[in-house]
Length: 95
Image (tube, rainbow, N blue to C red):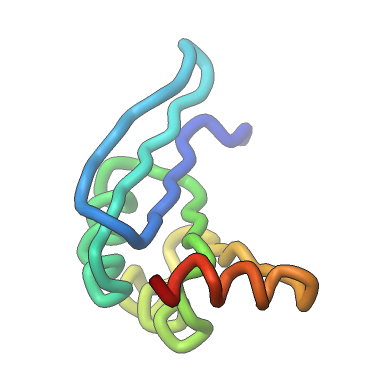
């Protein structure tokens, strides 16, 4: 089976956006808090999303909560930032 439905959940502000082609679609959901990612992930699984990726705003703890909440039905990955990005990330979110 090919990947045809991808989901991405990002922390920031609430929104829903769809993008794609005839062969591939992506749903991007914005949430204000990582806790809201649980409902977003459940909706994605119900819609047939095959793979979910979480932005770097989700800690490993919240990623685990999302995975458990969807009962391991689809793979869930987490964007991570390397050591070289830590200072810039701090400056970005300290404002």
